[in-house]
Amino acid sequence: MGAHIEAEDAGDDGAGRAARRDEAVRAAVEQGLLGPGSPIVGLLDVTGIRESAAELRAAFAAVVAPGTPVLHAFAVKATPLVPVLRLLREEGVGAEVASPGELALARAAGMPVETTVLDSPAKTPAELREALSLGIAVNADNPQELDRIDTLMRSGAGRSPLGIRVNPQVGGGSIEALSTATATSKFGVALRDEGAREWVVQAYLDRPWLTRLHAHTGSQGIPLSLLARGVAETYALAEEINRRAGRRQVDTLDIGGGLPVNFASDATTPTYAQYARMLAREVPGLFDGRYGLVTEFGRSLLAKHGTVVARVEYAKTSGGRAVAVTHAGVQVAARTVYAPGSWPLRIAAYDEKGRPKEGPVVVQDVAGPACFAGDLLAEGRSMPLLEQGDYAAALDTGAYYFAHHYGYNSLVRPGVYGFGPGGRFAVVRRAQTVEEVVAESGGAEVDALTRAGWGVP
Image 1 (spheres, one colour):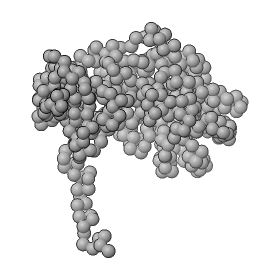
Image 2 (tube, helix red, strand yellow):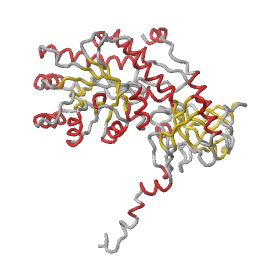
Image 3 (cartoon, helix red, strand yellow):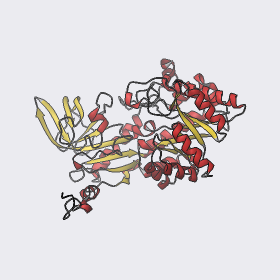
Image 4 (cartoon, one colour):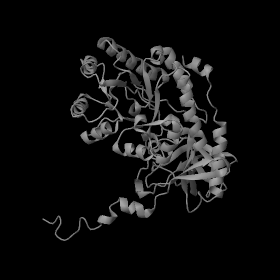
């Protein structure tokens, strides 16, 4: 089936995106956004983000019955930046949030409550109360959480769309940490555990206000066929609930996100259109108009549209291998540094003027600034030799990279800029200052542990 899908839609080869990226790096150097005093930035391709949002909407519009309500809720954890959420809101995309902080970001971006979904395995009573009072959709993760929602519903706390998250237990992909439908996943009600499926069905029969059903199989490393299996299991459960209820109680299926990203080239593959067509073949009843639909894509919407660019501070050799020491490492690419086999990044070389680097290919390491030996963006990579003053660009980093700063060595968070045609830039997040690092690290409480008499036996 995979080969058949590829034949149907080869996807975007990324040539236009690569050209926009090259233009943005050159313009960033020319305008001083990159340089000796600003040695690392994150760049976001606004045109690319808009294109991905449009492709997502079009892919599902092509397979759903006319008039079917469809909400594409961006997984805020992928790129938790308020201007990005605002841009997606303009493009008809909502927000899937998994913490009070993410909900606050979505609200700051102006996301309407009717396009916001709360998923989290550890919601407090206060978080649930807030969500229900606002009218935000909530998916209960487990029986104890459903008990809390029962209490709130009896008190008339709100009229949010409510559902239960289930784990179809269909298996995992190549990255265990991102496989959420395994036998022992921490998420949702495990449907194949003894008595669990019957408990879920009865929970709906006892609560007419449960009208949604949610499942998410995983993300990077999950093949499309496994994603489709997870959706098929969820659909079958909804059909069983409605049959036993004797009415259309479950009216909306939240199928999660999880479309994997190709990190090996600029090509976009798989595509939303491929996935939507596969679902239409494998689970045709999903799109016949009887169920509203919610998706929760994150990485696939943003990854290809972000680039971390860092200046080469020093170029050296060690054991005969060239090493470029840059300002991008574990603080912006923790997953790549700690799990390079699962999260390899492409590195593009640019010269001191921000132009694509040319010249003989040399095997080299691209190192970060953190004070441990494993802080490497790339090891043994063949590319034009990076020299002092050049720039190394970590590609496909628009999701789960520069917006997820790791505070190793108290390195500051880089500035993030959106870029558009003609070398135009917009500040998305200003670079952190060292003064802000001190403040975050208890600078205002410098005497907290040494005040006279405190802590002395």
